[in-house]
Structure formats: C-alpha cells, structure tokens
Length: 404
View 1 (cartoon, rainbow, N blue to C red):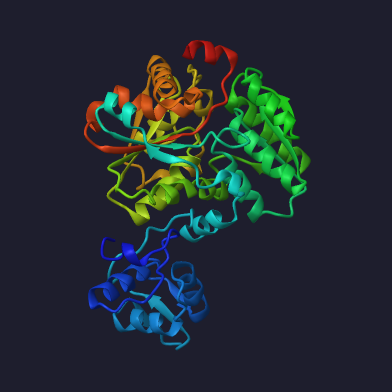
View 2 (cartoon, rainbow, N blue to C red; view 1 turned 90 degrees about the horizontal axis):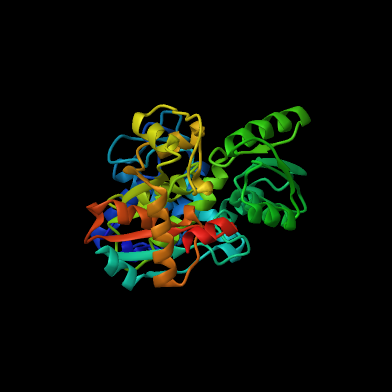
C-alpha cells in the first residue's frame, strides 16, 4: 500500500496511471485484488468493478494490464474472463467495499466527516497517543444516522418499516424515515432510556414499549412485522446499516499517521463490522478491537467461541451495547476482520466518562465511552497510536448523576 498511497483519493480510488514500473505493478495488483479468484466476469462486469476503484477511466489499458500480468484469463467462449489464483483476492464478504464508497457520497452530510483529532492530555493520562472520533455532534447524538440513512437510500420505495432499538438506532431510523416520508415504528423495552424514547417520538416514530430488555422487544417487533406483512429492519442484519457505519473507517484512514489499533464499541456489531471491513481491506496491519460491557458479554463470547452464545440477562449501564441475543449475520461479518474483543466493567466505564468530560469537555453515554474504558482496563495498548469512536451521548438523568 505504501507505494500506492499517493495515487489514491479519499475513496481509495486510483486517480492516475503512474509512469514508474513499480507503481504500475502496485496499481495492477491493487485492482486485481478486487476480483474474486476463480470467478468469471464478462467485459461489462469488469468495467463496472474497475469503475468503482479508479477515476481515469482507461478501461482498455487496465483490462490489458490485468490480462498481460496473468490476473485475468480469457475463457474459451471468448466473451468472459476468469480471475486466476495469481496474487491475492479481497476476501469474499457480504459488506461490499463499493457500497461503502457509495455510502460516503450519498449519506446525509450532517452525519459525515465528523471531528477526529489527537486527545493529547487524555492520551498522556493513558500512556499512549490517542485519537478520538466524535460521533455525537449531529441531530441524534450518535453514529446511527449513517447506516439508517444509507439503508433508505438503497431502499427508497418503502412505505412503512418496523425496527427494534435500545434508542439510538431507533432515532437514526426515525430521522432518516421522516426525511423520506416513510412511516417508522420502533419497538423498545419498557425500561428503555426515557430521553431516547422521547427523541424517537419527536422525530416522528411510533414507539411501542414491550419486553424486559432490547432483545425481548426485538422478538415482539419481528412477530408484529411478520403478522402485518411489513419489512423488519434489524440492526446488524441488514448490510446497508454496516456499510453506512463503515464510512467512519474510511474517514479514520484519512488521519495523517497510521494507527496501531482501533478500539470500537461492540453491541449488535454493525459499527465494528463496517469499520473493520474497510480498514482491513486498505490498512490490514491495523488491529481492530471490539469492546463490550462485561455485563452484556454475549457478542464477546460468541466471537471467541465461533458459535452463537445467548445470555439469560444483561446487567450494565451501557444500554446501547446491551445485547443478549447476537445477530448471526453480524457475528459472521466479524470473522477474519476483528482481532480481539475485550470486556469492560461498569465502574471503569463511569471512570472513562468522567475522564472524557474532564479532558475533552464532552458528555458521553456509557456505550460511547467503552473504548476509553478499555484503555484504562487493558495495559497492552501503552505506547501505541490508538483511535476510538465516541459514538453516543444520549444519557438518562440517572446516568448523568452516576457520571458525576
């Protein structure tokens, strides 16, 4: 990637055909990796794929280079090519890099290009170089607007949708649905954050309070959607939600210095799956680490065991990542992309919230501070350049008092 970096734009597209032989080789290998080994492509498919990854639009040159260097071989029918096993291919994945590129161009700008900067004094306390990405300065105070907005961009003809949420995802869906004139119903727990409930309603959603926790509400929401023939939009299940969240990864890689580690909050998994998909394709040496609440360990246990692990209950102040029943597709999306998943205790999360307020002047909800909590609880990041996403700031009065 180093020989290639100066030839790429912010969307990781090659902007010009280089003159140096080594750079030409790097460009061809980079483009070849976008084709899946053993798969057949006709000329239209080749051109569409190349279009997503370069801007100077010399199709004939690039196709010839791919063939001459052995990456594409013409099949016997004469009208298609097969990607040979020479060199590496990007991993097959349901989250498409081309869709992430598109998302970065079509998501409502109010959610994009969020501040990311060195948190120097906090980094000194933690013994490392810390970069924070602030996802709270938007109409819903969380990152969820990215995926929700991209979902409706890709599904513009819906009339009504059903979802379940602990609160932030529901706000994102309500905000994006209102913009498109789509009716939105959100199912949430009877114990959900009152502030988040009020905000979902203010954004035009019908909110139904059911179940003891988020996962119980989700089961009722699925049944309701099926009974009424309505689409159920599940966070972590619909790829568009993760592809929208992945735009944070695209933005993080614009930072002028390379990261050693990204610490990403892990609830249903849409955020970390999207970010990891992009980062591991463009900067594979960066470690991507998920952070869950110790009182809601289902995703950590599922990721570590490679099987779906459900827990009977959750006990954490971090309601935004309080998952009891993992989404199978989300767990699959993490395979081969996430390097580690860590757990943090509630007292450490509260300490992290206080430190962020003290050093950055930002008020975070518990889920938004778990990356900082991981740095407090796990010493292996000392001396590294680490980035984390401060992903939400919708606190209840009780959470605010606990933070203080």
